[in-house]
Length: 282
Image (cartoon, rainbow, N blue to C red; front, side, top):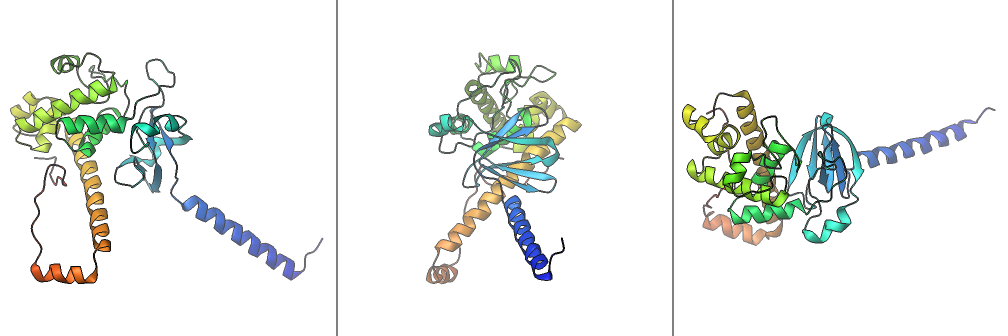
């Protein structure tokens, strides 16, 4: 059956509209609480995500203030987080990175809100939660039951001897592990006069190696470890500072801007929570 030109044109217009709708839908960042399934079998709970070519940004909070960048090729798929309603009241954000499967038993494992655990431990030892989360990400990929070939265990990969010294009886207990790891990280920061690079290198390779080489040891694993955490942490803080400046600028009236410019800006002091611009090669 032959169609007249007007019918064909109408069909093309409808097809074009449908394609545009589908393209717009696919281009939108995914929303709602999901689990990003990683190639290693674990997952990261997140509020929404944004695919940026070879990197996928997983936002851990609804206001985009906390996020993790994962190689897109390491993510095999996404699932709805069926545990989110049960943990939503435990934290201001229900976006909590966690393993989807207990690597010991192989069964689904409900966890307390990890954000709350990290925030509490960070407050106890005066650390930035974003820094602690970056260390956990590098150490275990948020796998509560991770065990390294050398025997380090849990979220912050505590060696049995270190866990014992820190009073951590069960390294697979998320709260105890993060408390112990945060305490150890704080001790290392104080030991190296808050030199984050040296503290991270000592966390990975041991303080004796840092002192032996008077800085970051020349080990590929340690240098990559330090560089990864520093880069991720700096990226988070830079994004947060940019967002804060935009909100501040939007809240100011033209009169207030002119008044401040006439007085001159006052210098502000930076703390450990500020962006750490350091080199992992020193």
